[in-house]
Every structure is written in structure tokens, then in C-alpha cells.
Picture 1 (cartoon, helix red, strand yellow):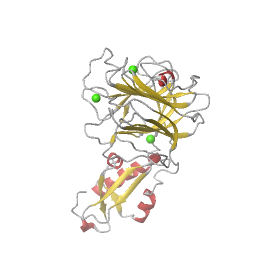
Picture 2: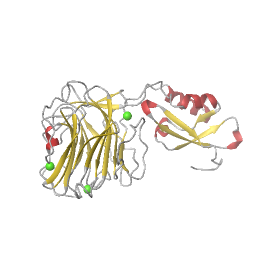
Picture 3: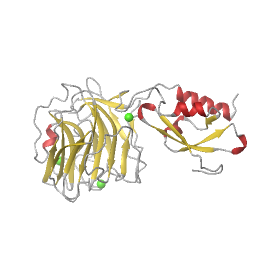
Length: 349
Ligand SMILES: [Ca+2]
Ligand SMILES: [Ca+2]
Ligand SMILES: [Ca+2]
């Protein structure tokens, strides 16, 4: 019984019967230059996520009470953020020739600093995030004015007047730290920082534009990519050492590599998610399947997750040829399948 229809059915059932995918990474706050981090190459060749002009970095963070214990108050000085529990580090050893930036927690509040040579500033957030709840954190940097802004759950949480100009990692720059300088590091300081982020991280999007000009509704689902998205990580791999970039940005992808270690060992894949929890595929797939029992996916699970159009075969109308469905993974392993009713039988959407 290995007809294509049976094969498709088997693949579909295999997808449906998978346990919920891990949805985030849990960092354990080990301050180390070797482990408890994700490393993303920026250069050689130059990667699209190496933003330097307008940019927005946004992600979901969760931290437990008592964690991220750096007790230094955030200050507006250039590089003040470096003293916190570092969550994102795109520092360059020394001042760098263009600039650098980073994000940390100081007394549990977001500190977001950007430097251009010796000039720069740190924006200080006001909300202590250590409540064991997920928070959407967005950081915007205006290249013309230098303005830095922090939004927590869509609300302005802090801002600073920073330095204007290019802060990217200069393509091909010489460095005495080739193993660490040309990196964006998640969950830790890239060199020998004293304090690392402890908690969960999910759904990181880096954009080459200012996504938010003011307060905005807190996102409630995974992001979709667009032309301004230069990197997009959903942390849904659930195993292995690769953090995949699903932005589709020209010049990418920009995958991350997990460096696991420390005690307790981190980072670890986690089933925790910032998005609405519910049954697997509760986001429309099962009702869709029930309403269309003759439709079966003719693609494997990998294609389902690619957010690309995949062909479906309508067994109720076997002469109609393949139609096309668009499948996209949403929160917590939910799979949304949208069948295009206007696609002609011969279309290759
Ligand atoms: Ca995720
Ligand atoms: Ca530096
Ligand atoms: Ca560059």
C-alpha cells in the first residue's frame, strides 16, 4: 500500500502525531565566553542581519523572580548596558571602527546601548521583567537622530538620545578576536562578560527599519517575514545545535550555532512559548481537515513548516489536478493551512 495517496496520508499522520515542538531556548546565565550562548556570524561573508542604520530588534523574553541578579542600576552612559545580564551582544572589542550595540537586564530592566566610536548612549527601561511571564521587547534605533527606544509589551518603556551614523560591523574588518568579534551573540557577552542572561528567549526578529513609531498592540503570534526583515528566528528546532533563520533575506540565511555548556548546562530547548497555548494544530488545521476530509497534503512535514505553498490533492475531484495550500507554522506547533480558492489547477503558486 504505497500509493502516493497512502504515502501522503502517512506523512500527514506523522506530522499530526508529533509531540509539541519546543518553542524557545532556555539560557542558564553561565557567564562564559565558550558556552550558554548562541553565536550568529555577521561577516566573511557579510550577512544581512548586520544592521547599522535604522533598525528594530524585537524578541520575547521570560525571566524568573530572583534571576538576572545584577544589582547595578542602568545609566545613560555609553556602554552602560555591558554591566548587565547580557541577552544580546553585538559589541566589538574596543570601540570598534563603526559601532556596536547590545541589550541586557539591569535590576531586571532592559538596558539597550548603541555606540558609534566613542559616542553613544544607553536607554534604560522601567519595567522589571522578572515576573516569570513572557514579555515582548522591541528596541528601535534611529540612524538619523540616534534616538533609542525600548518598548515592553508594546508600551514605551525607556528612551535615550544616542549617536547617529553607521554602527554595522565593517565588512572584512581586521580583528585580534576573529572567533568572537564578527558575531551577534544571544544569551551572553561575547568576550568575557561578568553576567549572562538567565531565562527564556523566543521569536527574535531583526529589521532594517523602524517598525514602531509609538505604542503598539502586543504581538500575539509568530512574525511573518517581509522585505525589511533581515533575520527571523523562531527557536522551534527543538533539538540539535542549529538556530535557523527563516527570514528568507537576500544574502542570508544567517543561522545561529548553539554553544552548550556550563552548570546547569545551557542553552536548552524548551517547550515554553509566549503565545496562546492549546492543542496541537488548534490554530485552524483540524477544523479545516474535518471540513475537507478528502484533501490530503502531498508534502512532507518539512514543507509544512516552510511557510511555502505546498500542493494538495483533492480526492473528491480526482480529475482537477493539484490545488495549492499555504501552510505556515504559528504558535506552539500550530499549523495553519489556507487553501487558495482562486488558484487554477495548473497554477504553481
Ligand atoms: Ca518559538
Ligand atoms: Ca565595544
Ligand atoms: Ca558588515
